[in-house]
Image 1: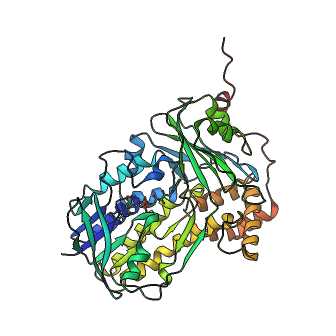
Image 2: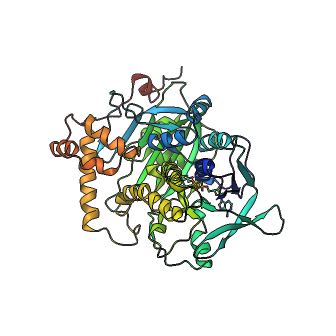
Image 3: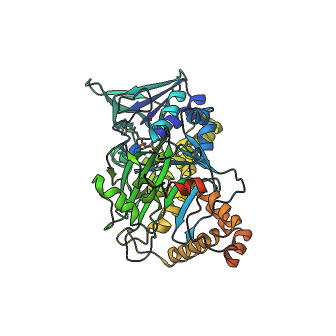
Length: 463
Ligand SMILES: Cc1cc2nc3c(=O)[nH]c(=O)nc-3n(C[C@H](O)[C@H](O)[C@H](O)COP(=O)(O)OP(=O)(O)OC[C@H]3O[C@@H](n4cnc5c(N)ncnc54)[C@H](O)[C@@H]3O)c2cc1C
């Protein structure tokens, strides 16, 4: 029997299981939570209460791993929102235009519980994948040369050992990988943190409109200067609702009090999100999260690495959630796991180290994007911004400003933010030339809303 074990049944864990299954006789996913049988909340996924956008780079990777899942999301009420026409975004450089020219880029807008449920339901239809839920992995079994399984505690029974040819740690930002590795003799793994002290506050509203294709609305923060960065995002989700997330870095955090929610959104660089929700009916109280720091573990640079262990998803790195990268990086990582398995199967001795190196590529891309801005928040980085950081920041500002009036640069930026192209796309001659010329159209003075959307801001006076 070729056996694999996945620690954690979240998004990374389910995608890893489906990538593994062509190469294993049995894949066991061990999950601490008892999994709900539907798109319901669970304890191990507290971030699901906050806005989650899935960029097309990630959505396409998930569709390749779990065919049919996009249709399931859409049938259940998710929206596939075209970029750039479906986004109203206020950046520090001004409003982005909703360019009409179609692009292949989009985002999936729905609740996180709905996204995860349809992935999980489809993945678990494969009889070779077994979910052991309500069970917790407590340690790795093996030594510094080879991991041969895990210890599991389930349903109050005594701890037992499960053997495997390959163990995947997909246990999220709370992963104990560093501790587990040190107990089998592997230490010295480099870590970095860039934490702006960002707090998230979210609340669900009944949408004030039944308009199809209502856009994602987003007022972005300015990550330079002495002020905290404050932002808001409104995501249309299933069942005609809006999921609104507000965020603020250290000193400018939103609060958990319901009565402060709309005022916070109204005092941002632009009050658009506040104006949209001021008349809307809230369906939930405000919930907060502070688990938002950028954190990276450089497993691929470890002085030694055991056979039989791969770390994936948030267990490798977490990113400031305002950039919406975590799920897409997890999906790209699971795809890379599948590609590396094709070379020599589950038992090939160099597999684990090769996968860890492969995963480092999308991880580093996302990390570089998120931290390029966040290093400028006071107290955020573990080291001061370097000259290179400042140059990258200036170039990024120039590109963003050009994108407000150039469809060409806006498309290139969208390609990169949706994780469909590497950031090196922004260094191609066509983009550099366009950035040198600057915006071709003048700045928009007000949000690019359609007349029907605009009418929501000016409700008819009551008689
Ligand atoms: C506020 C917020 C907003 C976000 N917004 C976005 C967004 O817009 N777009 C985006 O792409 N990403 C976003 N993210 C990031 C995204 O939530 C994560 O990247 C994603 O959930 C990572 O999935 P994962 O499977 O690696 O980890 P998780 O989702 O954390 O799953 C880990 C699983 O492992 C289980 N587990 C943990 N330890 C054990 C153990 N010892 N034994 C058994 N099971 C265990 C947990 O119960 C959990 O189910 C956001 C994050 C936050 C905090």
